[in-house]
Amino acid sequence: MSSEDRQYRLGVIYVGLSALAWSLSGLFMRAIETDLPTIIFLRGLVSGTATLLFFFYLERDRAWPILKAIRWPTILATLFSAGSMISGLGSIYYTSVADAMVIYATVPFVTAGVAFLVIGEKASRSTLIASTLAFAGVAVMLTDAGGGGSMLGKGLAGIMTLTVAALAVIMRQHRDVPMLPAMAFSAYLCSAVTFWFASPGTATGQDMTLIFLFGIMQNALGLILYTFGARRIPAADASLIIALEVPLTPLWVWMFMAEIPPQATLIGGPIVLVALFGHIFVEFRRSRGPLPAAPQQSL
Image 1 (cartoon, helix red, strand yellow):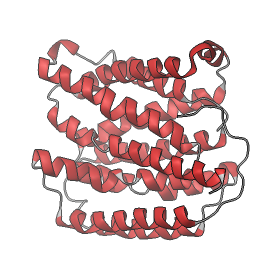
Image 2: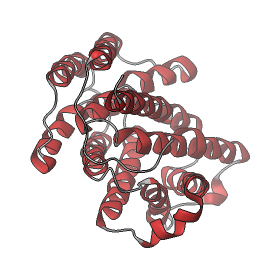
Image 3: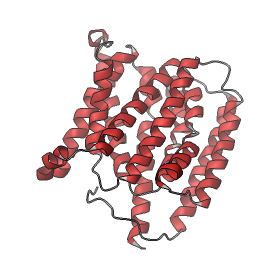
């Protein structure tokens, strides 16, 4: 197996695990009782600190020079990551989990278009086929998704889709730039934006425990895994694998919180899963040519 194949497989594993971590968002959002700004504010402090501590542990003596050398790619990644987190949590808060995830499922198409326009990266044939099949699953899910949730929630889901696509392209284009600081700063930026609206005193002890777990298990772990995975695989592939969130997020809420998704979601979700795992199977068997210079970070 070539080094490029190993890098691709590692990237798929890391991004897949990040999708698994991020798919817990609906479960936490339904379990925590305090208001949305307070959730975002406290979660940002927890996840930002955890991610930054991991960065210092990983880089050790190189950490401060990396922070001093931060330039516009890191700043853009920070802004896009923060935008995706705020809009993503807002979409789940203001509309159903199924509605939010159905809109978010279009992210592979959006990312493929942005990647082609910005960095000239063409999606592979298997990626395009898998994305089309995933979109068919989304179309099925949409047949029951239009009746309930608020337009604000759906609009925020659209913003989440655009910012996630932009983040994937930035991280792919600048593989040589350590992006863990951007992930930590984006969590802190979420806290800074919501500071004026948050009411930490209203959070119960149970809320605080859940928010701590939310920040560590769902956000910080997801950010770290995505950072190390997205730079190893094409941007469209990363976004397609992240689409694993679409069926999993309402599934956890259905299993543990009894929020029953529409029947169309139960039909369309498996279609998305078939597209995803079929694509992974095909790409794992394909040899790929050498990549441009890769970053020195490892995990």
